[in-house]
Image (cartoon, rainbow, N blue to C red):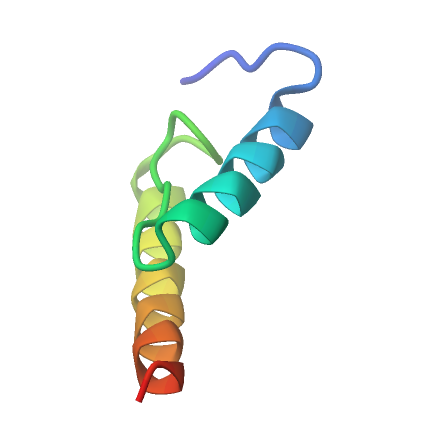
Length: 60
């Protein structure tokens, strides 16, 4: 189970925002970033897939 340091959530959010600006189709997901365990990772994967579809459709 990951042991996050104080400020991890804010740093992760900032990294995600910077990445979205630089590389709109790339997303950070996984237990290193948000919640450990298979259910949390599966939920992140599903959310990332839906976000990728949304971003791809907005590019048309």
